[in-house]
Structures are given as structure tokens and as C-alpha cells.
Image (tube, rainbow, N blue to C red; front, side, top):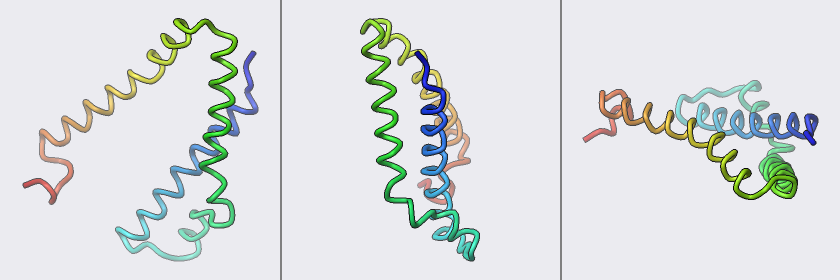
Length: 107
């Protein structure tokens, strides 16, 4: 059984967490300020967003684990998580190798 509405809620919560962090970083690092950046911080609901994401993710993963044999569950998680993980590791390694990141912090 697939919970499309719950997956949408999970996606919205994940994007909201990313937006909150990026807007906070933009304010601190680049001095971007104003009503738009303050609105992107979602201050009234920010304390609820991360627990919401973890609760929904826990529900989805627990339901999936209960309806799928453990070896198949682990195989699906590995196939879903590790390609993106190794792609990001490769991109960061290449960026550091070419001196593109972290910029001024390189010795």
C-alpha cells in the first residue's frame, strides 16, 4: 500500500527544512535581510517541521518494514540511498580536488 498524501506531506516538510536552513544561512553569510527572507524562516511553525518530517518518515518506513521481508527492505533502502550518497561524495571530492570548494578555507 502506498501513502501518496503522506509522501507529499513528507516532501513538503523536507523542503521546508531545507528552505529554513538556506534562508538562515543567506541572512548570516550574505546579509540578505527583509520581509521575504524573514518569511522564509517560517518562525511560527519552524519548531514543528523537523519533528513532523521525522514522524512521517518513521511511519512510512515502519509500515514498509512491516509489509516487506527484511532482506528486501534493506536491499531497497540501499538501492535508494547509496547512489545519491556516492554521487555527492564524488562531487565534493572532485570540488575539493580541483580547489573549487571550500574556497578560502583550503590551506
